[in-house]
Image 1: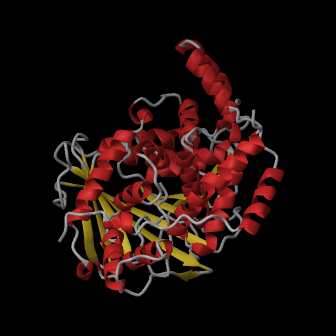
Image 2: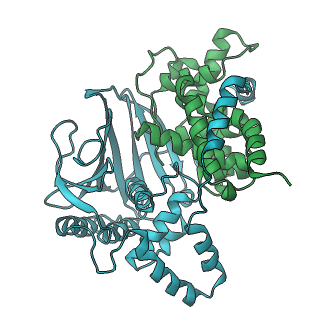
Image 3: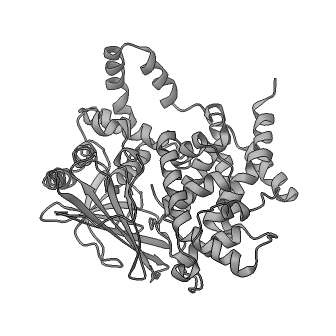
Length: 302
Length: 178
């Protein structure tokens, strides 16, 4: 065993210059693309920063509905989807660990290419303490062997809007949209509703994200036109229940039909409106309240 | 005053190879060039809002591009797969013996995804704490803590026997979603 980690630097890869031909062709192609118009979100955010809070909130209330299309008439998710989302929010809120308890979340994912399941040798599991001043414990397993059990400070996962999120669903959706694009997370599709859908998933699958915030997201999604409920497909995967889908997005959220429990998500499987893709995925989240967590491999430094 | 296209071209030649090196480590040679092209296309479309220093933003965008491409969510690749990619990324003339090199890569590959990324963003990609924290979407203080812990784990990690570097490579190649 050594205490010297300089070997990492010794293995530093050489940063090779681009192949000149590829570089010239690619650069020319990119520059031929029109630079997009500045995104609406940025000037509006500047306004929000500079105006008094009350004026900013009033402005946001006017702008937010346009985010998701014309739903000023109160139109939102379909009735069936709204019922699922409402039930799911309640189910989530019934799983808040008390101090001394942990929310145990096991992540199980499966992956298919052209219908053939690919081997997956790893999984991971989180224990989120009811006392959020304590670290979360994350355990990784590969080939049935635990490879590491690490403490993760919950404040590293915290975002300001987890505790100070808007109570208005549309403002919350707007906050999700901003979270999705700053810092940049994905290629710019220019579709803010898609940003929200993707960001909602990132928050919902995050073990460390406060349960109350996840429930608020689910309730806010009832305001999104285009969200509908369909039965999960039986083609591949093992997530069975009701899938919430959005327009032509391949990402679907899956809930238990009876209890409303959020079971996970699928990509490229459950939305019949989505274009067919060769890579299909399911992520199952098994969530329980437990009284203890594994001992981590080391303690966090103060 | 330089035009946007001139500034972008400078950035392409300065930071592009660094983004390519990053992408190669995560997604392999075959797709890395596509990731670079897609990343800079996003940058060009948003050029007026890309913050300085740009490398942190570019790495964060490359992460997003890879995530979109793969559309999978396994956060923890199989160890042998990690090592194979690290080996591919670091494949240039090195002074270590083959065994020593493999041992070092195995120790690095055995780190958790978060820890390995923290170490490599600084040691290999040359990002400082502020740039790396921007790339990961966390605060600089949180990144420094993570890096400190990662180095501690790395220093205490066992040799190659425990890390099983000679496992057959996994077929799966995936990325952390968030």
